[in-house]
Image 1 (spheres, helix red, strand yellow):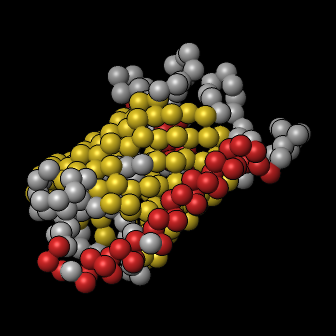
Image 2: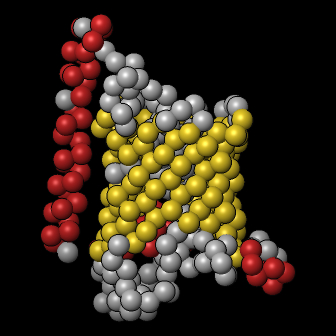
Image 3: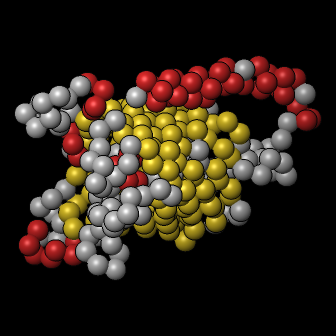
Length: 287
């Protein structure tokens, strides 16, 4: 546990340190405008592809209000009124500290979780220049549902879980964008029969623009070191982006109901060819 905390601190330090020098680099580039490359348009319209983070950040000074909802299992039919009886909700906010730094806070009904997040852009795709956008994203979850009645030896650190992600995207055309995302997740408290303390995944996602205000999105994450059973599955999600002026509205179908990154990637209960398909939506409102 001590090593994980040290690793977490080092990763954060590694993430932030070069970025304080980024402003100096930009100032140097401004001194020589002829050498400055034109930045490509954002690969994704939403801050999420569907549930996985995209490489889009909030602009400096922008506030985003976020509401996400995932209903229960559609395949149960009238037993749970097609999922309406068993919903999970996320309510949160994000703020653009700089054009290259976004911080966020959200509260989830799943495990009564509080999630802190940070998103940093390292490099940006350029027209006739650097080919991709590279972003760092990290979250820290605090599970407030855990009780000492069930876990008599419960410590404060047992409530914590972390995700570290490196989304890399490329906009190939006005209509088509792709992203790959290596992911590392650490949980301080687990059931060893069903999951591992440290989990690694490789995820990918894409966006195809159908019209001026409509796009089809798809994402999938494969667990590299899952335990030898199929209690949890790899998350596969399809969504539809609808741009409506001041906000982006996303309709989502997924085999993973949880909305916090740690649980979304590692606790997917459904199978697309069987039971466990969850419908929901994301709404981002920018101020």
